[in-house]
Length: 173
Image (cartoon, rainbow, N blue to C red; front, top):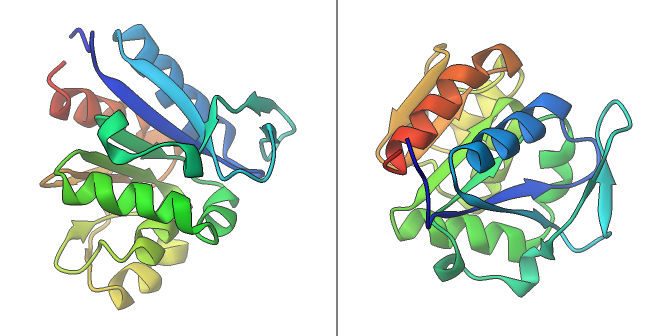
């Protein structure tokens, strides 16, 4: 299950869902990947919904898709902030175009909506953004994890084990 040599971006902004950022970050490190916390550029660190800080390694405008093997977008209300940053959307769009893993959980599907990468995809998310996902051209299903090509999506913190298993498998771990 080694992800030695893989480099993954985990996106961050204020109001991220604690478990949906921290669990993927730690699981990927545990599997041997190099993980960067990539922020929108609005701050050097961000606070979770419950007040836990995460320090940013680099901002989205300072990286390119060629630097990474994939991206994980955590939920919470951070994705509503993230989707306002063109550099972050560009990174997600380019990683997707290169067939690298693009993963979103809970409200993180909003980033995929704004990046314009959902047309023709089958996905899941929190039911709260189901209509947004469908209106962006996706087929939405209520399932703990959905893998459609290089896209991995899940609904909620309770789905994290299945979500990470799918991401790690896609990365070859």
